[in-house]
Image (cartoon, helix red, strand yellow):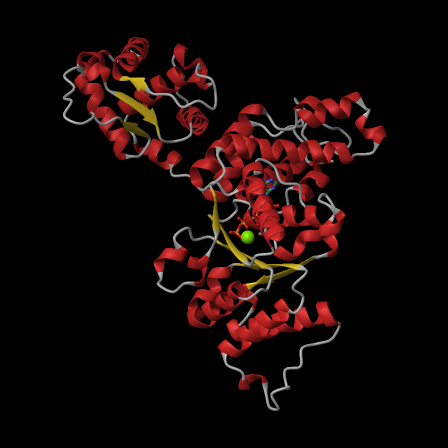
Length: 457
Ligand SMILES: Nc1ncnc2c1ncn2[C@@H]1O[C@H](COP(=O)(O)OP(=O)(O)OP(=O)(O)O)[C@@H](O)[C@H]1O
Ligand SMILES: [Mg+2]
């Protein structure tokens, strides 16, 4: 089962526009799907040539969402009569040396599609090179217009690659849009301001633009959960009906582990591929742990014993381990350099955060923190720290801010805060990571945690 799941999340590659047959189910992009579908349908009914630009950061689902919408057109989710009159061609700009080469590829594909023969590039009597960019653009527009009754969808992924050949590309797009070609061009790229950066950019002629925002925490969780659900639905009935398997499957990822993944990835870049990659690696690690299972009380692994099904899961500890292995973390090193007083503050912060529902951002004020710190100091016989009061704590907090562990809220406008206790701050590192690393540090120093540090254990 773990092997199947590893395969399921082994899609941290970027979707290719030609993948349309291997239709990947897309979640949480309903708005974008609807906008694309409506744009296509509107222009089909008007018979008008049009250009749409899809943009957004890597891994935000631009290519796969478009693939999904287009494949729903092809599989007949819309009226069959439309199907007969719809022709989709997909290209990736990166695979062409220049716009001219692309133009010839387009002429070839359209010629094959419409007339069952390759484009006659020697009709001008000499070589391909005899045509200039403008002539090629006119030929493409003519060929498209020769099948005026059919709607053509021309998808160009990584369209920004053509921006280096601006005039040629502008000519191509202009001719397609100006003639009665009945063609919808859909361009995809990362850049949001691409159309405005350069004068005379072809994409500036767009009729519509859709921005794919980076995925937020909730969306990442939904996508992963939905992918897992779909996997389960595909299992043979016998497997699905086994209550033990079912229970194990749906508790494979601990809730807190899932929150950590989604939160971290949304803060990093909102690229769902990164989340898939973490999940995949966590399943690989889990598989290893099951394979090399050492039963409790024994010293060596036992090939014929398996962990209890309830223990086969991706835990918070496992995910933290994977993140650390992949992206490293400066936190353990930073914690090691911090003096005892700062660590007490962090311990107090962890205690205050521990009772807070996961997934919600929290701000703490200095007053709250001071009470918790005083409590810990009494336990650890650090009366000096209590004596330095709120100002002492503020200095230590400034250190923590310097190390990027917390951020202190700046007073708004002209407001001068007299009362330090009302100052607020929040964690800049992941709470669970801080909790785990602090615990590891105390353990390595073999120092007992104070009673209130229960939350850290
Ligand atoms: N909403 C989603 N639901 C399910 N899978 C998704 C979703 N969004 C993206 N994916 C998957 O994540 C991977 C990356 O998506 P995709 O290649 O479409 O991103 P992109 O925005 O085109 O990235 P790039 O800018 O790098 O080309 C693909 O394997 C895709 O199937
Ligand atoms: Mg893409």
